[in-house]
Length: 488
Picture 1 (spheres, rainbow, N blue to C red):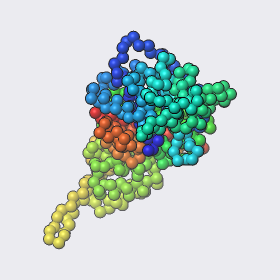
Picture 2: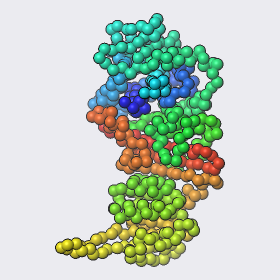
Picture 3: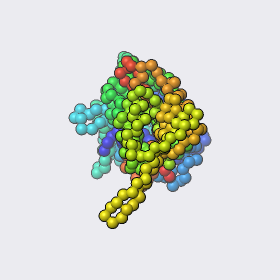
Picture 4: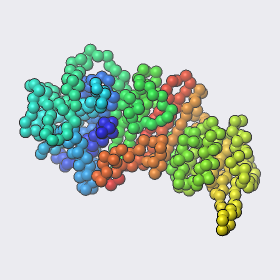
C-alpha cells in the first residue's frame, strides 16, 4: 500500500462523511477557529513528511452533498468512509461519526526507523461526553498502561496500533507507540520550541478549512513538474474545497528557508490563464511538452511535423486547441525566422501566399499518388496554414479569420507585457476536458480510482498551472489548480 495515496483517500473520505446523516437543529456545533489557531496543532511532532489539517464542520458540506448526490451515491461515499476507518482499525459500532467528531483533524506521516514504510499519526477532537470505546468498539481493550491503549483485532488488519485520549478531548492514534508518545508530549514542549515555518504559512491561510503540507516534494501527487529542483527544504502546500460535485485543489511550492515565502505568489495573476474562449487547451510554454495534448485532433503527419518543429524552437509558444482546431503562435525573432520562413518539413508541399493589410497568409498543401503492387491510390495530407504578422508567426490546421488573429495577437502581447526582467521560466497552462485527465504532464486521478473502483469514479476535469522563475532565484514559483470531478 502506498501510504501517500492512502492518506489522500483517507482525507477525502473524512471530508465526505460530513452531512451523510440527517442533522437535528438542536445539536450543538462548535464555532470553528481559524485553522492556524487550532489547539490540535499542539500535538504535532516536528518533521512530518505529509500533514493534513482540517477544521471543516459537518454543517459546511451537508448542504452541498445533499444537493449534488442522491441517496445511492451518498451510500457509496459512506462505504468509502467506513472502509477507510476499518483499514485504520477504527470501529464506531452503532455510533455516528458526526456525533463523536468535534471539527478538528490532522493526519500526518513520519519516517520509520527501519525505513520500510512511513508511520501514521491521526489526531482528532471528540465531543466531551465521548470516550475511546466509542471509536474502537472492542470487547477487550488491551491496556499498555493506564493511558495508552493497544489496538488488537484478531484476524483483522489495523494500521493504527495505539490510541490515547488527552484531558482536553483529543484522540491520538498511531502505528508507532514512540510517535504517539512524542505527539502527546509535544503539547508541553510547544512553548519551548521556536515556531517553525509551517506555522507562518498557516497564518497566511488561516481562513482555509483543509490544508495539506508535503515536506518531501517527490511524494506529492499535486505538483509534477520537470523543472522543479528536488530540494528537500521545500514544502508543497495544497488547499481543498468542495464545489458542487467536485473537489478543487490549489497547490503552492514554498521555500522553507524564507528566501521565497507564500506572499511571492501574490504577484502571479492566476486569473489570466482562465480563458473565456472555447479552447480546451490554452498554454504558454514550450511546444514539445504538450504535443500529446493535441491528440486526437492531429494526424500522424501533423504530429511528426510539430515534433520536428519543437526541436528547433528554443522559446515559449502560445498553444490553443479545441476538438477540431489547433493554433500555435510564435514570437518572431532572429533565431526562429529562418526556421519558420523555410519550414523545412513542408518543403515538399505546395505553398501559396496572399498579402492582406499587414499580414501574409500562406497555405501548404500536398496531395500525391502512390503506387503499390496492384493499385495506384491518392494520399491526402491535411493543409497547414501560416499567418505572418509584424510580431508573430501563427500556424494552424485551419484558415484563421482576422478576428481570431487579432485576439491571439492581443493575448500574446499581454503575456509578453507581463513578463519580468531576468525571467527564464514562464509557463502558463489551462487545460479542460479529457486531456486534463490523460496528459502525461499532470498527475491523474487513476490512483484514486484504483482503490475506489465499482464505488465511485474520479476524473480531473480542469487543470491550471503557473510556473515562474527569475534570475538569480534558485527555485521557481509553481502554482497549480486542479478540479477533480466525482462521476456519479
